[in-house]
Image (cartoon, rainbow, N blue to C red; front, top):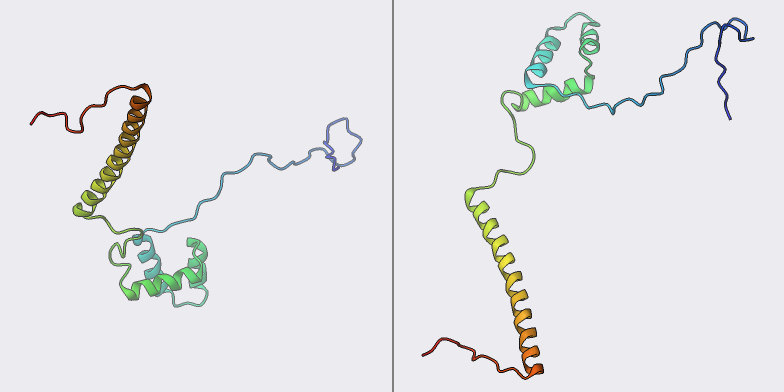
Length: 144
């Protein structure tokens, strides 16, 4: 077990008038930094103008950018991905027909489940009617 000595005015510890303790508060989880297109383009133009040895390193340190990120951004610029929004990430947007088909499929599945439940209830009612000796209605109750 580790014990921490706290210095106080009357403590016998010599030369320790104040003790520094770490902050026990848990820090929030760090988030990944993201650069906008305008920031990337600005940093790339500044990097392209760096001709003096060491000026590119100073720019990278000042902006908090790694050289690998700069290389990736240059590749994206030559591929034409930094001019506009670039390719969208994630699923493509659904068409109105696809949305309608999905809605109809959900409704069909719901109605199929309801029909199965109704069939089960009718079968149980028929068994109870025969068990109690009650007369069953004709299959087609509408008169001809």
